[in-house]
Image 1 (cartoon, rainbow, N blue to C red):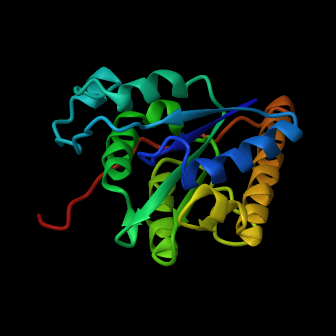
Image 2 (cartoon, rainbow, N blue to C red):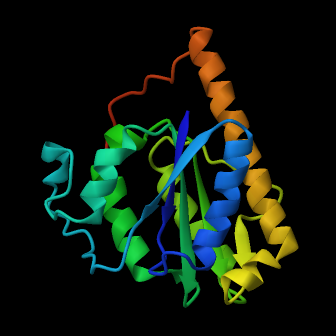
Length: 206
């Protein structure tokens, strides 16, 4: 079993990374492999709404989004981490997620997911709500912890001093490992993921 931890921060080894590393260490202690995917600092366009991804299985723009989609099938679960910018996830992460969740249904659905947010002071819960909505539209079980998955600090050193935040990350890692084992046990017992009806979309204006 493998978990892909996505660092949406432009800082490869900053506060968000520090939180994800605490989860990675916990997963390792639980016998679960993990890797970190860095969204990076190259400019990311938002979704164009062209609909081509439904035909191609990937985005028409070849950047970090397609790099992620190419890897995602190898993993059993995901943690998406983002810093808070103006009480919201940073713009690059939102552009990334809009396109990943539009193009990547085939590699995301039925896999557990969790959001992690990093802030200096405030805006964390609004950002946490924002990120969880992506999982809720793709049949992804949302993994929780003992508190909202957030850390506080302006530097990695300050984040490591957020004792409750670090404990929340460890609890999240253990819960993720437990959910993955439960899903695996269910498959072995003959209970695969549920089959769903083909989605019917309706518009409010007729």
